[in-house]
Amino acid sequence: MSNLLSTFQTLSTKWSLPPSTHAKSLQTLKHSVHLQTTLLILISSFKKFVKQFISTTSEIKTRLETRHENISNRHESLPSIFSLLRNWFLLLLRLRDSQTYLQSGEARHIGDVARSKSTTFKSLLKSKGVQGDGYTSYFKSEFYSGASWDEYFDDKVGLRVRLIKVLGEGKVNKLMERTFFESKFDEWDESYKTNSQNLETSISTLLTSISRYLGPVEFLGRDKEEKMKVTCGLDQLILHRLGDDFALKGEGGVLPEGFGKKEWKRVCEVGEVRGWEGEGKGKKRKVIDEDEDEEEDGGIKVLERKIEKVREGGSLEMIKREVGVGIITTGEDVGREETVGGEKVWRKEGDKNVEVLAVDDVEEDDVEEEKREFLAWGDELLVLV
Image (cartoon, rainbow, N blue to C red):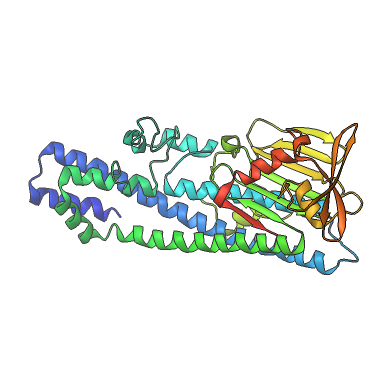
């Protein structure tokens, strides 16, 4: 890739570039070479991470199937399965942040922030300023790597645009054609898209398996708001990323340089997520009651709980209402009764009369809150039942 710099020196003489133009162009080209060299190393690590994550996901899927087939002798307890899913979710968050790091260079973790501070080639993305509303920044993070896809291709402040402003589009195109410099980006883009598609397929496959062998699963993939809720009978696991509180310790960052197959295999071991520790705000645990345990650890909220058992005469639909899915039934009210605790409502469910909570009696921290939370996810919510 030094061919880019040597070719530029030759063409610069031929073009009789003024010293200031030559100096600005050369600095931009040096940054571009650094960017491409770094990016190719990172994408190689990302590919190995994705491959091992897919292998881990496949192993969890197999364990779910095995547990389901041995229904009379479940050698793997539900808490053990929930622990696997928690670890899988943490790995997924790291992968999502890896994708962000490759695309924009946003430094979300200690090691990545340290690199962004020490690099000679500082990111120029934040100079893009704000959007049309006058206050929303295009690039909001405090630190960027200076070696990402957007750093080169952004249409306002990318290195390519900056080079064109100094040299002119004709000279830049001629330089790129002679050196095939940008063809490497095409290879990178194709590889990234293929691996990202394989990742999405793997995630979808596991969610389908969870739905088939455990029970309903709800999944939100929105950046920094990732959530997953798994219901198995009367047991429930809820995982929720707490925005920027999720952070990796260590100097390596989200995609440590030099990580190969062996290192990523160790990180992605199913039984325990290794090679990272959550920074966050420290570990907090509170037992809400004997059937509900909430924990904040490493920037994610983990909630394991028992769903209140359905009263006599209940149904599967009643269970769904108890956890906030379709709480307002279309069943016909067949009776009401005033009690000390409030009003009981009896509704027709098929050929059974079911006692349900009156909607007006739902407390702020009860199922109605859960209902609002999950319905607020909108179109990005994936629900498998």
